[in-house]
Length: 447
Image (cartoon, rainbow, N blue to C red):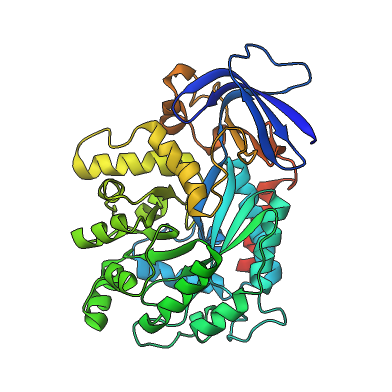
């Protein structure tokens, strides 16, 4: 075992903040070998992490190429559906090379924000006319390589996307998303393999994009591999209306009837649900990934997260379209959105919000051994400065509140993955000049 010790000035240990914690790491295996509390000073040879250290953050829902839209789609009026046309224009221009460059920069931005694992909801599979690349998984491999080069873990949620709507073929923009059938999708993505930093999961884009008769094929693929399965669910009322017209049931009921729901499944957004939908999701232990900054950016609405959690649906968080890349803001926004909706405060404790951003987010991505600071866990940590203009003042004894209600991604000082610094003192150790890398990658798509 190759051992490295970190001394944490303050550490969040799931229920409270503990001062003076020594964490021994097996860097050859990337695991925490031991956690010692009550260590008032750094042991000899230990690396010092000043500030408040959390488990690494998990971004459970990402579309990396949407980062190219930041600062452009926020101008003017419109709806989700008008935004989608602009999004398609970016998707049309992606190649394996340009997607790799963009995703590498996007994942580096995530690392700077304290994110140590991402769930990439990946559906841009083929050339723009729908022709597979020589390597049919060239786009997915580009994303896997990008995450490795940016130093973070990834769950590639390879997405089945077959139609533009109920009974409708893919439109011109969507041809490159489709494999033609769920069986062909399963054959292609079965070639993808897990690796040290990456796991392969599955996704159903939505009930409008996968015909009802093919939903079970995707669910079975994930079940056989015990892989995570994600699905955009009831993000828009128009989708709910179309589903009822086509099938006479809500999207949630349709998924339930075809064996999609369950404890390894996560519904993304879960915004416009009936009471029966909530009961189906909670009763099956299907998770919910809330993406508050995207949901408000697209004017989607505020989902019933409190009711879902009470019904039994575990909550996770995602940055989705990357209007903002800040998991602390996502956690804060989930609580504040609910306050606006109900005109009442205190729906979650700060500790519960952090669990959504850490342990429960990792679990949604199939990394059950991550998201905690304890012996045997993956050695992934995020340290937040306590002396910035945002965090100065609140005392560490206030606990998770300092992180959730005061800090932002700009306060992340260190990010450690598998026991090694990916971000040190606010600088990325693997990707030089992340802002410039982002600028070049975005400009290449706009050229």
